Each structure stands twice: as C-alpha cells, then as structure tokens.
Image (cartoon, rainbow, N blue to C red):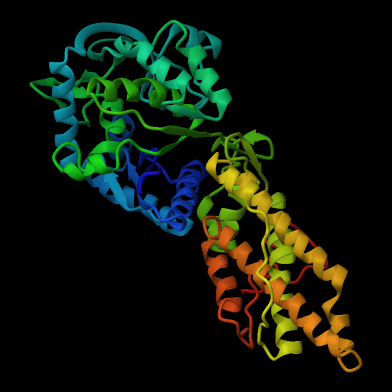
Length: 500
C-alpha cells in the first residue's frame, strides 16, 4: 500500500550566479510529481533550497566588496523568485547557512566520526572549483585536463583533509542499485554509475584546511578544518525535514524521489548513500536523473552567448507555456534541445491552435446553439492507462504526449461530426437537437478530462478550462488561453503580440 506521506527533493544550487534553465527544470519536474501525488490524495513535502558555502561564494563576495554572509543574503532570493515564477508548490526551503542546518551537519559529522567512518589523510589530486570536487587521474586524462562542464583546467592540489570511508559501503550501495531498492531512473544512468564504481566506491574528501577554504561549516573539534561541500550540501535533504531533533522527519524520509541533473549523479548515488548508511538511515527510493538542455544542439555557455534565461520565457509567454514546452519537448530523462523557433511553434501551434482554439470553439458553440447551457450526456471516458503508466514511471514528456493525443482526437471528432451542420438541421429534424446536445456535452466532458490530466503540468490552464465547463453554464465571454505571440521568430502574417 502506498504511504500517504510523500517527499520529493531538488538539488540545491550555488547562489554565486543567476538561476538557469537547469534549476528551473529541477523545480518543474518536482512540481509536476508533487501536483500529481496531491491529485491522488497524498500529503507531499517538496524541498528546495540554496547551497551557500564554498570558495566560489567567497570569491564572488570579495568581487562585490561584501562579506560572504551579506552576499548570500542578497542572492538566495533570486532562486525563490524563479521557483515562484515556475509555479513550484514547494513546502520547505533550506539555506545551508541556516542555524539549524549548520548544527545538524555538525551532529552528522560527529555521528560518522564515532562510527569510525572519518579519518585524516594527506591527498594529492585534481580539483575543479566549479564542481567543488576532486577527480581521478583517469577522469582528468579522459577530458584532456579540462573540466567539460566548466571549460576550466583541473588544479593539482595537495593537502591534509578528513575523509569519509565511503568504500566501506560499496557492496551495499551496489546491491541497493542493482536490486532497485534505490532506483536510478533512467536505466542507462544506472548502468553508467555501476560502471563507474566497478572497482568500488572511492573514499572522498569531506574537509579542507581553513587556509584553503575559509567560508563553510567548521569541523567539530578541529577549527583548522572546514567542511567540504558534500557533507554540508547533501545533508540538506534530511536537515530540512528537522533531522535530527524534530521527530517529524521520520514520517517523510526516505525520499520517494530525488530530482537531480546527470552531472551530479556520482555524488547522489555514491557519497550520499554512504552518508545515510553510515548514519543507519534508509536510502532514497528513486533518483530521477534528467539531462541537459542544449540550445540549437550546442551546450549553453556564457562564452558562446547562447544562455537562455528562464525568466525571459516566463515573463513573455507565461508560466504554463514554459511548463508545457519543458515538460513535453524536453525528454524527462534525457538531454533536450531548445530554440526560440521550436518554442514559438509549440506555443502558437500546439497551445494556441490545438488546445486554445479547441476550448474557444467548443465554448462558442455551446453559447451560440444552447444559450451557454451544457446538456446531459454520458461522460467522456478516454483511456488513461498510458497517461498513468507514464506518470508512474516518471516519463512526464510521454504523459503529455498522451494528453495531446486526446486534444487532437477531439479536434478530429468535431471536424468529423460537424456540430455546426447539425445545428442547421434542427428546424427540420427533431432528433438533431438531442444529437447536438450529445456532441457538445461530450466535447465539454472530454475537455474537463483533459484539464484533469493537465493539472500537474499546466495548473493555470487546467483551472481556466474547469471554470469554463465544470459548472454546466459556459460564461458569455472567454479570454483566449494562448493569444498569438511572435517575439523571436518572424511570421509576415502573424499579428503583433496581443498582450501589448
């Protein structure tokens, strides 16, 4: 039996820059899952937050002539703004500079240390500041010494740090992944990670000397060392629930789903489980790993100048249009591609024509032919098996494909039965009135079912469709759901932006 309480998490981003599409994708995917679970009667806690420690933060603070705390205090709100703009119904927001979080990670450190899982060791290796992580000789060699995610050279670093004995949990982690106890979705990401740990999970540095890392949580009982990002950041998933002092955390952990980008899988499938096992806590049930969003086939890059601001999309086209495109046209579990042309084609064609015009058309016919009154007819019973199966398997793009099949089928149905012609026959055919009533009631009922399926994806649109058809009386005036907009692509026959 599915437990009533549910918990979903998102990766916490550094606040040393503006939020980007990847952050928005985390919030969107988690919100889709959250709304779907709520539809099915579950009480959901949905975590978001910001990672506010580390050298990158300290460097940005210095560049802005601020102390680190003042800098992060002025930056974290940008992520809250994006969450609100995306429409994420999160319940818990954590900052790693929060007093409770700092005390909790120091408690976690002590627990792991008491269990003999932390030791001191001098390490020499390759370090990437962008990742705030060390990499193996093989990883550096395979990328020609340049981090592929940040396009910066790895630094050779030698220092004495504390280490987490993650290797002690190799077999338990491998078994949890292979058995599906901790499921990695999609399957090919699971296989990639199992290949990565074929020689074992590596012990990992969890502190750095204060002289090399000044901004972070102090290591308990050793003020010369500062906690390295992973012990601090990964712990947020349980500290935000109140771990260890608020017993309520136990009613939500383990997480049902943890949403992460593919670039941080190695930390969430290796280090995080080692920490949890060291604390004698259950592992998360599912790691949902999404890919990157490319622009015209190329990776987004400030250097290249192809970075797309999620706020620009939302402010110009609306949150539901953003949610639709990135939920349907970016495959949930793989890399996807964005161009303004693709986006506007989806907005004006699929949202404006397929759905928006359909809603307008059905409402107009009910108003014109039946004085706005929706008649009685058998409820539409579109087979939702494919939709539910896709949602269950976290294939949100496939679920939306299924919804759009219903949208297009209803359009085709209206073209086939031609209710406008049935309306003309009423004067001479007494059966035509009942037939017209049945056709339009079926169309309205189908749109209500479509709206129910759109609730997790496009909540404002779903609510608008419900407000038009759910009461049985169609309003006299209907505002177009998706007015035509051409801001980034040219169309000589296109009207101007109708909202200006």
